[in-house]
Length: 393
Image 1 (cartoon, one colour):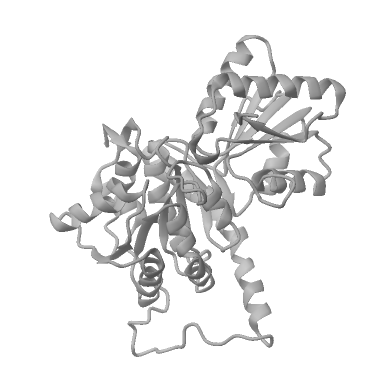
Image 2: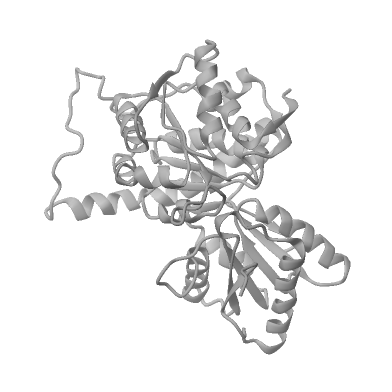
C-alpha cells in the first residue's frame, strides 16, 4: 500500500523520479520547474538514487546529453519549462527521430516576450510537432502518476518515442495537494528493468547514428516515424489500464464528465479541467445538460475518440491556454475543429482563448461560456467564433 502525503506538484514528480531511479538526469534549472531537478539533485547527493546527474550549462546541452545517454543505453529523464524547452528545440526533433524513450517533465509556462514566468501552454503547444508524446495532468497526483506511466509508454518496443509529462506552472507545480505515493518496490516492479534497444555501448555491434539523410531516403524515414504514433496511442490506453489494476487509478486518452447526454460541452487541458468539473456539477444541479471533455493526451492526437465523445452535443467550446500567432484560432481548437469536420460531425464549435501568462480563469467565467453555448444551441450559429475570456479592453 502506498501512503498519502502533502506534496507540491514539482515535488510529486521528483518523488516519482526517485522511485524510478533513472540512469541519467541531465538538467538546467528554469522557473517554475527548478524544484524538480533541485529536489532530485538532493536525492543524488544523499545517495537515495544511483543516477548519474549531469549539471550542464544550458537546456540545449541538457537535452543533448539526455539524447546521447539514451542512445548509449540508459533510462533518462529531465525537466524544464518555457524558454528552456525552446532552447531544446533542435534536439527535441532529433530525440524523437532517433526513437529514444527520454521522459521530459514539462512544467508549462509562457514563452517570452514579454518576460513572464507564469503558466500557459505556449511552450508545449510550440513543441507539438516535434514528435514527442504529450500528456497533460490536472493536478499533482496526475503529475506523479503520469511520470511513472510515461516511462512504460515510451519504452515499449512498439513505441520507442520520447514523452512530455506536462503540468501547469505554479497552479500545480507550487500548490500543495494530498498525493498518494506508492511503495518504491511497487513502482519499480510496475515499470520493470530497462531494456535498451541497440545501445551504442554494445561495442560488439556498432552502427551509425545521425547520418546525412537527403532526398533519397529522408521521406521514407519520416514516414516510418509517423507509423509509431498509432502504437503510442494504444500503449497509452493499455498502460493506463495496467496502472489502474496495480494502483487503483486508471487513465485513458481523455476523461469524459457527464458527456453521455450533454447538450453543451467544453474541451480543456490541465488544471482548468478541474475547475470545469465543479462548474459542470453546479450547472447540472440547475438542470443544464452540461459536459466536459478533459483531454489528457494531446500527442498523439486522439481525433476519432474526441469526435465520438462530442458528436451528439449541440454546441462545444474549446479552451486554449495558448495563442497561435497569425492563425485564426488557438492550437487545440484548430485540431478539434479539423477532427470534427473531417469526420462529419456538424457541431457548432467556438474557441475560448484564456489565461495567457498565468492569468486566472474564474468559475463564473467558465459558467458564462456554458451560457453562451446554450444560446448557440438554440440558434445553431456562434456569434463570435473566437473569444478572449478574462482579457481587459
